[in-house]
Every structure is written in structure tokens, then in C-alpha cells.
Amino acid sequence: MRVEQLTFTRFIAALIVVIFHFGSNVYPFSLDLFSFLFERGDVFVSYFFVLSGFVMVLAYSEKKIDYFKYLKRRVARIYPIHIVSLAILFISYLLVSRNFPFFEFLIQSALVHTWYPKYSLILNYPSWSLAVEVLFYVLFPFIIQFLKNNQVNNGVLVFGLWMSTQIISYLMVLFMREDSVWLFISFHPLMHLNEFLIGCFTALVYLSKPSISDSIKNFSLIFSATILLLLLKYPLLGVNYKNGFLAPVFSIIIYALSGIQGRVKKILSLPCLVILGEISYALYILQVPVHNLSYYLFGQINLRDPAVSFYLYLLVLMLCSYLSFFIIETPAKRFINSLNLFK
Image 1 (tube, rainbow, N blue to C red):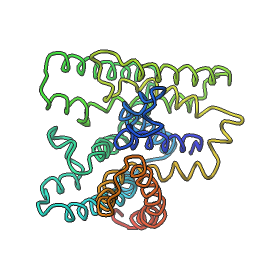
Image 2 (tube, rainbow, N blue to C red; image 1 turned 30 degrees about the vertical axis):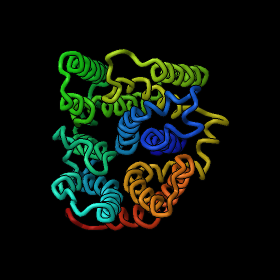
Image 3 (cartoon, rainbow, N blue to C red; image 1 turned 180 degrees about the horizontal axis):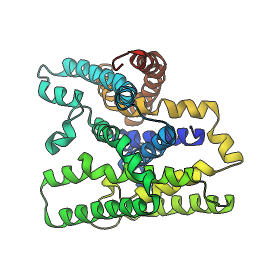
């Protein structure tokens, strides 16, 4: 089951993360009116985690999951572009340095680096979220069975896990100032499980089709989006947004968008916007390798203007993402899924 109007939101979230990393000081993103959105754009990775749980439940809620075939499909989903991103990064390292960090390359290739806090942001640092997703994928078949058994009680457990994660995070920030603590609460897979579970539970509520009017859904969307913007504009002192604090807000936005009708649904479901959503994964995971290689080449031609460099880089990134989706990602996924590894 696909909800097409959600697909484009992945592109919006990925683009905000890219701007956060490389373009927050570029016009118009640097304007006081909405610079706060891009200065804290990294929190939209949390949106990916919530959305991941939501769409996976929609995809598998009525299916009997063959565990190993399911894992093969997950590998086919994330690994081809992940490997391509590391290959591009390897080339860019060779151009500027002879000292390539092979150990870091190895653990990031295996997507286990975020289990060791000091390696969370090595090399292609956005891939920390892929290492988190791997945990979600491994646990998902068990999670969905657990949540489907008793939605009301399990909803309380999911909320309890979210609340516990936020309390632990707050106390660790308050009493422990070491960098390793910040890396742990921000990037360790276990600290993000609450976001995925909230997405899963939200999908089960959506599938139960409660009687909610369109006007309430529209109000919920506007209200939750407003709360999100206010929390980003005026961040709460001492609260770490990186490990799911905004997950309940994101879940309401996703739920409301899933049930929205009329012109908004038609616009978000336009094929051109859906394609942008489809290339969002490549956009996100290729952003650092393409940036490193692009800016190396910009330096060779003495291109120094920050705005021109960023927009040219963004154009190259978009093109690479589009081509990689059709030339690499889709064929590789089809090939891996066709392999009879588990009979």
C-alpha cells in the first residue's frame, strides 16, 4: 500500500538537510524570516525515521514476512547507493590526500559505525542514519507482530519508550558534558528506536480507519506544522531534538497528510513530485561525496562565490541523484531481489 502524497515530503526533508549542511548561509536560506528552519534542519532526519516506520507497516501489515527474503529486499533498498557514495568519497580522498582511513571506510561500509559513538560522523557522515535504519529493519518483523496484538496497550508502551528516551537524553545532557555523551544520545541506533516505533504505531492507527472528518485532519496538519515551526524557531533549553523529541509532531503531520483529500492530495501526487520523492534517498546519501568532489573541482577553476558554488553543487547533486535512481538504484534493486539466495 502506497500513499503517494507522502513521497514528495521525503524530498523536502532531504533538501532541508542538504541546505543545513552546506547552504544555510546562502540567500534566501539565510534570511531571518526562515533561517531557523535550515539552521536546525538536521532534525528532519527524525522525520525520515518516523516515516520509515509508517510506510513499512503499510507495506507489510497484510503480508506474511519471510524474514530472510525481507532482509534481502532491505539490503537491495539501501546498499547500492551507499556503496556508490563511498566509492565517490574514495575518489575525492585520493584527489586531496594520500592517507585514506581504511578502518573507518570498513565499518561505515558495514553500517555498524554508529554503535561506536566516536565513529558516528566519519567519512560520509549522513550515513549514520542508514546504520540506524539497519536496526529498524532487523527488528521490524518482530515489532509489527508485537504492536498488532494489542494496539491500545502497545500504544502506551511506545509513548513510554519515547518519553523515557527524552528523559534519559535530557539528564545526560544536563549532567554529562563529554562529547561522547552527545554523540551517543544524538546518533546511537537505540536512541532512535522510539521514532521508528511511533511511525509504526501511527500507521496501525491509520489502517484502523478511525472516523475522523477531513476538517479535523486539515486542522491537525496546520496545527502540528505550526507547533513544529515554533519549536524550531524557539528551541527548548537543554532539550536535544535529534533523538525523537519531535517524533509525535512528525507523526501527526504524516497521519494528516495520508488522509488528506482534494487539491492538496492531487498536487502532492503529481508524477514530477513523486519522482523527486523517489530520488530523495540518493539526494540525501550522495550529498557529502558529491559536495567534496564538486568543491574540489570548483577550486580547480577558482570558483569562490559561495552562492554560485552552492547552487551549482545542488544542481549537480540533483542530476546525480536522478541518474543514480534510474541507472544504479532501480536496476541494482531489481537484480538483488531476483537472486535466489534463500530457498
